[in-house]
Image 1: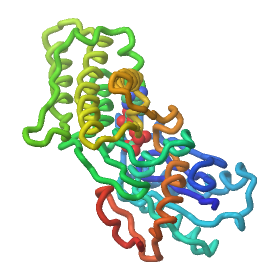
Image 2: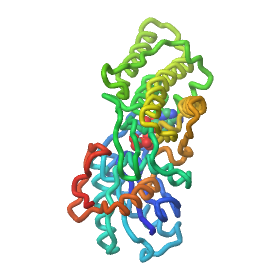
Image 3: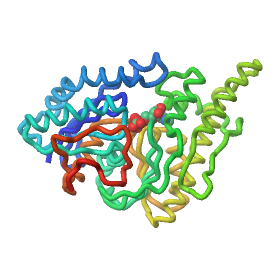
Image 4: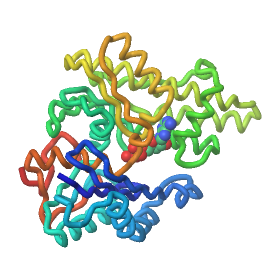
Length: 342
Ligand code: KG4
């Protein structure tokens, strides 16, 4: 089954063709990062307009690059939540038109389910059940993936997502947008014990996380140094910040692994590209004697192929959408999906 899949929830427009949920025929991505960099973050209006400009061309390019004809496409999938609403609407409108024009089913896919499914593209042997640490620009979740379309959220951030925290840290240090990669790079030469930064604990909710205190602590530290003329060790601040993020995420993930009895841990999302987090995950998994899957770097960030991968399993479960499909700014990944059959 060949699925044409569309992703437009934030600042990447992406169209892919994926066979049977596991094989990428092509994955075309247009990143808007340069358009938003001057503002230090994503400007929703600019994101929507850019999606409108490129989405048709990207779909044509995907079909050409995959060497298939439009008649070979068996379904159209789209990331319909969560995300910047204007941006998501562009993808949903395009996908509905494409499915209608081709006379094929429409498959709505939750964006974070897509991030999780990116791992199916890289690791043919990977199958649920497993525990997933989903860490992206807009979401931070611990998910028990019981089956391909049966998931339970064990914990989540109460405020900022881990990626957002990276981006704000980069911004206050003047490292540009998106901030994860430059923080990661600068941290390599720093001392992760140089600055003491908070790791929040949520009473009574062992798997929930909070990053707003960490973000504020970094901002205050930088402003204080600016005001007092104290020289800041930026590399060590980045390293200490990454240690705090890692200490928020990894012990919780390992505790969830133990509680669920999963012997497989999977990472997903843009922040899973972080070298410190990848190294700490590897060490923790090795110590616990469990199998770890971390997506290759090209599949950590937003892409269309991950939507096509999850779409295949949603389709097998009977989860298709109709002409009334809408876009949603927020949606839990483990509850029923509105307007979806099955
Ligand atoms: O998954 P993604 O592309 O978008 C969402 O679905 O939200 O994640 C984007 C986030 C950004 O916050 C970006 O700064 C972060 O992933 N990121 C990283 C790294 N590369 C990207 N964070 C930490 N370390 C990295 N190497």
